[in-house]
Image (spheres, rainbow, N blue to C red):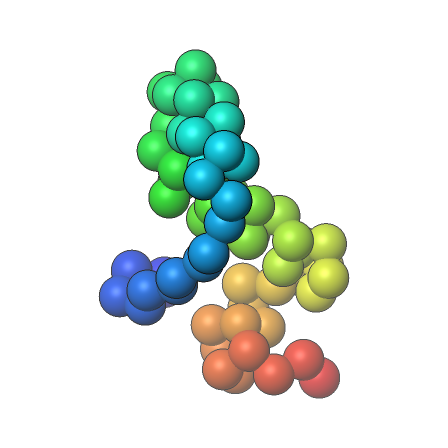
Length: 63
């Protein structure tokens, strides 16, 4: 089960941040929601469709 307790700080160009926030607003999602979606997609691409089992059942270690 996902726990929403970790914080990730990312430094980005202010113009890119503004463009990203505008695009997120157009999709009616928060920047945090979009970043979480990007992360899920990337993890699934790297670990496969059973990534949740891998990540949540053995601490993120790929076997």
